Image 1 (cartoon, rainbow, N blue to C red):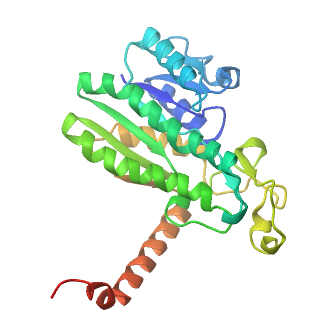
Image 2 (cartoon, rainbow, N blue to C red):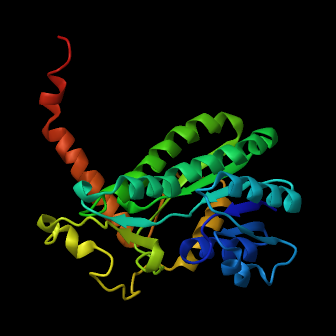
Length: 276
């Protein structure tokens, strides 16, 4: 039986993971900024579930969550850094305070949680760290440069982390979802610049919150994503990046093929910089 600590469980993939973990018989610390929003997930699992309020941007909140988790279960075997949100702006429009908050949630908060769980994982010489990113990390889009860069940073951080931790018996991996039927495009989950510039209205303007309708018809099922993640971790082989959703796999594959094509096209010029 493993103990999981999962962030951002109030809805979407975080909720899907928490439900799948508890259904599988494992233990879960199910977190959200307000734990009341996850009580429906934990209510049927009084012995194996713990609801905890956790704000990944607040160091004291992280410490308190770790204390509650350790008092209830004594150890954390799996950390899932899932909490995050989107931000739409042209690069020129991005407000530094908003971008810093985005990075605090999507990157620096996960780093602090990784640091919090690693001493225990190193002591037991086992553990898993799953960092949830987005296919935006593989290829950005108009208006998504800041969000995509925060997720790409988390992916490359994980790439280094996995190599550092492998000799210690700890596995780190990326979970890279495509479009899922979540509340990502609703309310606080997707924010936008307050400093819009008119020249970007025909491009970035179309992507701003309020300028499009989320019909909740995305192909991805958050509950199925949770089940896939739990099943992969219960296996004996783990990918570096687990891309979720058929369309996401196609999009990432196309992006990588285009990058390889461009690399080959410029090979001779690139190589001409070497000493003869």
